[in-house]
Structures are given as structure tokens and as C-alpha cells.
Image (tube, rainbow, N blue to C red; front, side):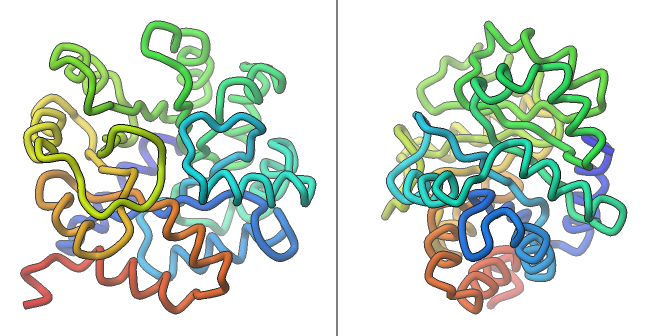
Amino acid sequence: MGKEKIATYFQQIQANDQNLFVPYIVAGDGKDGVENLPERIKFLQDCGAAAIELGIPFSDPVADGPTIQRGGLRSLKSGTTLKKVLDVLVAGKETRDIPIVLMTYINPVFVFGIDAFAAECERVGVDGIIIPDLPLEEEDLVAAALKRHSIAFIRLAALTSTPDRLKEIASRSEGFLYAVAVKGTTGVRASHEDNISTYLGTLKQHSHVPVLAGFGVSNPEQAHELSSHCDGVIVGSKIVDLLHEGNDAEVRTLIEKSVTKKSSLA
């Protein structure tokens, strides 16, 4: 489980000469709230996703742009809690192949209890954790508990970080390295920073796990461009919008076209 499951699943996709694509969804957003999670996970797996990133809704989502904030508010209104998400995930643990990664802020983890949270994640089949508001200097608060329960601790790298800091983050990351591809919060962007290729190349040089670029990715063209410098992409706001609109067909098209390498489309 955990980092080993992520590595195995990613390797299977890359062995088929495909880019990695991780969709982000807000847990509990949509019809039936958290009860729709198993259906959505299966749908995204069938579309070709490499893992599912489940966002736990939070009242103060500092890393999230307007689209994901709205999804979080809809989810909170439907009564979603961290415990409810974990309770739903355990039901499909034995039959679920695709890795599950939780994105949560540190406050809900503290409220749950760090050791209890890590143990529960292992029990229900969560494979990785992303905590965007936990800096490198404070990650010892959770790192040992996650390690004890074989949960991959996925770190985020920022464009504004120094080369030494990027090297340190890359060397520590487990499962995959989340390369934030914009300066700012999540959301659809028309383009990415001019130095993005250098930034992703630096991370690839120092990372022993796949590097995935996220934030601001909304179409296959952007996915292909970023994937040419790393291993794939994470797409959140566009996926959240399309699912909210009930546009499953476009979600499938976005994923299928993004995972297919440019050379195969020619």
C-alpha cells in the first residue's frame, strides 16, 4: 500500500507510453455528497487517471482558487467531514485499484489527531497525503506517523523557492512530487511561467519519484506542454467545474487526450 501502490500503478501507465494524469475532486461536492465518491472514483479510473486526489473541504482554503473554494462550500453545505470521507473510502478498499491521495489542510488533521488520522488512512486504503499549508520546517509533526502507517507524504514545490530548497523538497517527496506550476492559487490559466521548463527540469534532476505539474492546467495542450518536461499533470479546477456541470463526457476527453503523448496524436 501507500508509496508502493502509487509507484506500481504509475509504472504500469508509463510502461504503456502514457503521461500521468491525476484529477483533483472535492470530496462530497455533487449530488448525494460523499456517497457519490465510489462512483466518481471508478469513473475517473476508467477514464485513465493515474491516481485520484480527493480534496477535503475546509473553511479557510488558502491554496485554492475560486472554483475549488465554491466546490468546498458546496461540499461543506452537504455535511461533508473528514471522518465521513474516510468512512466512505473503506467500503471500496478491497476492490479499488487506483491510488487515493488526500489533500487536506493541517487543521483538520490536528483536530482528528495526527496518529489517529494516519492509522485511519491506512485502514481505509488512502495511499498518499498532501498538506499544502505545512512547510518543510514543520513537517516532522506528521512525517513519522505517516511513515509508520505506510502513507506516502507528497511534498509540494514552488516556483519561488530557491534551488537548494527545491533540491531538499525533491529529495524528501514520496509517491510523487507536486510541482506547483504557477505563482498563486489554483485555477485555470491561459499560460504558465516562462521559466517553467527550467524549474521542472531541476525537480526531475533531484527527484527519485515522478514529478507532476499542477495548478493552472485546463486543457490537453497545456498538459502535453508541461508533461514534456516532467511525468504528467494534476488538474483540479477544470475537473471540478466539468463535474459540477454534469459534463462527464468532456472530463473523459480531457483525460484521454492528456495521457496520450503528442507523438501518438500525430
